[in-house]
Length: 183
Image (cartoon, rainbow, N blue to C red; front, side, top):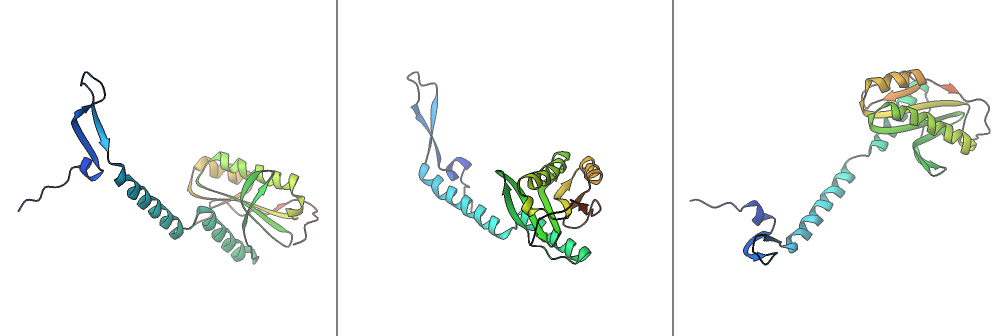
């Protein structure tokens, strides 16, 4: 028994009407879209997106977990990361404990621009929020896809680059001088 499969236009609710014409000379056929089928499809796509977001940790969540674990393992310091805004600019992750403060930028792809952005965010915090600055600083970047030139730039600038499985540059603790920061 042969069952005919629906054509793609039928599945999407598209109907070709050869008798409908956009111009009087009958040279342009119209395609009518059955809009009633689009609303449930749009809703279903939005629901799938929402479910996927709930099931998948964000890159920043993953970065916070990995960096906190590594700092705890290496230094014995427990950190709780949060997103902060300084002078209307977002810093992906910030944490402090005692005289140590950590600034992290997270991106799927690590380029030289992100390494520069880590330094810019550290300067921004230092200038506009000195209450968040401790005596010791860890500058870090978390990524999924590291570009080699960016890893070299990070190494030169003392930015600790991590992925979920490895450290691509060494951990450097920078001295930021005396501070009035009291956790």
